[in-house]
Image (cartoon, rainbow, N blue to C red):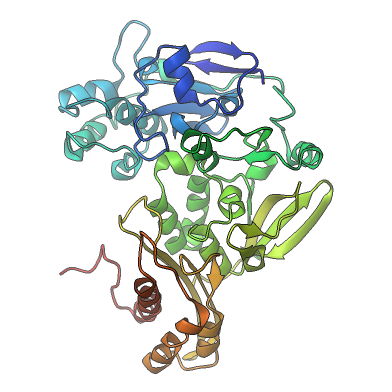
Length: 453
């Protein structure tokens, strides 16, 4: 694949690029730009953070799981490029010096580039912006103080990149869903790469050879968000930061769960279509979407079909998706917000769920009229709690009803024991989540961040 992009302000044209060569390896091995560090090599630690600018603006991304073809037409800044042409330090770099934000220094370039990106965007929620960068020496307080100190300083002119005009690099970089449908129908065995937050690890950790691959990041029509009086629809390539922003007013509990389950860097790359299509039984989006009554929209060639989301997941590792068929969008009915999402994980932020429970119970005149409850981590697929729902519907919204419904969990789920949780812990936690939903609906504080000892 032939690609062109900007690197620290200079045009780079590469020919015959290995489609699964990572930006991190290319920067370090081919360019000698070793300021970008390799830490976890799976998108968790942030040591390899760079700033990538395209038509949607500047974003911090993990270069270890960013494949070179995904950069076609974009602009990349590394920590070396944060410094001005005459050696001027970026305000974030100077602040890290002034506030003693570095000890061993291995994580520092990643922190700096996260700060450069957030500074370019005027973002001041520093705890969130820096949550994807791990430090084990300095501690976060001086680093956050450094970020706070540059809030009012102007963005240096040398980091104000813009994407460049390019021609199509390859049929494997389709420009629209129509082009994607054509090439995928011809090559149904190809691996689709959306944000590469999952597929990237197939390469960096499992050392898999992926051939052929098709990149979806230039299909702008798959990035559309549509909110009407009747429906909310997300294109498959909507990244999780944009999705969280759109959901903040519609379903804030869902938006908060999105904030928790990944860092800014990962959320910039991860897409809703990819999160659904990989079929993970512990993915956090499907339970929330199932609870909202979501429909998945699929396409193969010129043929489109829709499937109720919970029916898409057939068994562990098996989904209702034919060869050459891809996720085009997901939608759910516009509705009053009754959704609560409860994520239970060993770490509060940025961890895989042991159990994720999403509850959407409608109560009218003290009686439950509708209930949609779905879980991740309780079965081999994201799954509805159908028996629990049946115990709630047409019953008084009372503690007695809740106690009876708890007994139905054993009929809906037989969870497994693994490194994240035991089966009994999962089952007990699911029951407790229903109790929590009921108590929260009656005005009690249940959030661990709100309840004081």
